[in-house]
Length: 130
Image 1: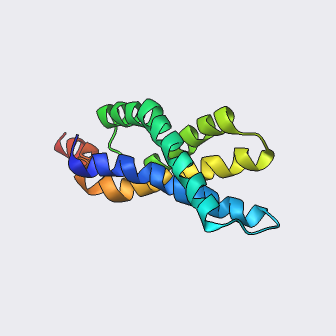
Image 2: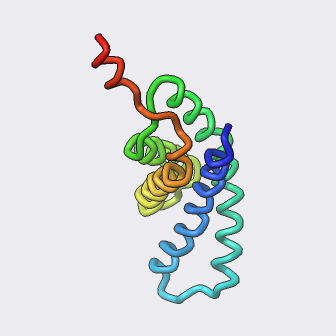
């Protein structure tokens, strides 16, 4: 695994860890303290990193083997894996909507970091050679 790909797997949970406290802050009538946001973000980073190792890394290996990974494929995979995380951790209707959206954003952030180190799509070249 290349360094940019490994860095992408660190940035993706960081996207969730930063995004969820910000989204949750708008749902509360009282603005939370920065220390509370930081503690929530740290706990979510650990949770998202564990889910990344369990689900996202094998999904990446599987997709990389069969197709060229594009930004939209990374976003769809992030949405699907976010839906798995929502089923595991969701308590309210808002969770079942917000967590997959954050998963999609994490997939896009992964692709933005690791996308240039991924192999290019050569399917059109194989078609032209025939």
